[in-house]
Image 1 (cartoon, helix red, strand yellow):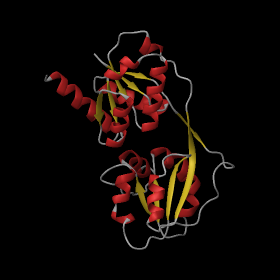
Image 2 (cartoon, helix red, strand yellow):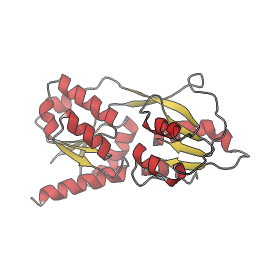
Image 3 (cartoon, one colour):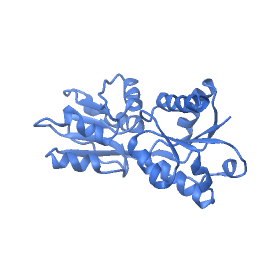
Length: 245
């Protein structure tokens, strides 16, 4: 049986591992990233009210929403947009309704009607430190006033790859972002383990699939998005197809 290598932060990997165990999958947790909240001194000051709030990840909800809560008091409620279903689920746990684009990435966000009308009273993007500028740059080109509110940073700890390099196991890798996939690729290449690129890798979007192809992965499985259930569906689809060969 193949083992699914989970590269999310530890708590996320452990949660998904539990779900996959119930579905009959073996897993190996290999967290490549840790998420650290920004301190009050590192965060920007609370911004002015914006008509639209975009949460770029579940971590943006986890670390940003408690800080931004005062902006929700005694003001007209903003339109809240979640980049994907996992982010929407996290918002719903705080009783906040949100809208999700059909295509769950920056390109999908930019196609939403809420961001394509004549006048918008400002957009706030709640996000991690750094990241891609595609969304911000395009909104600015449209004449939208954009405020970025970073509330966490990604850190890349040292990783023990011995479980992958000392055995002849069969693997399926999981990578929730282009950054994570690039990190995984770099680590394996440093251990002279490019042969592992022949194994399947599950990614959350066509954009990340293109990155996987450029990095040399030979068997890329595209999930609907980064949520647990989408990863599970992609794995079942792959195993079902393999069994039918």
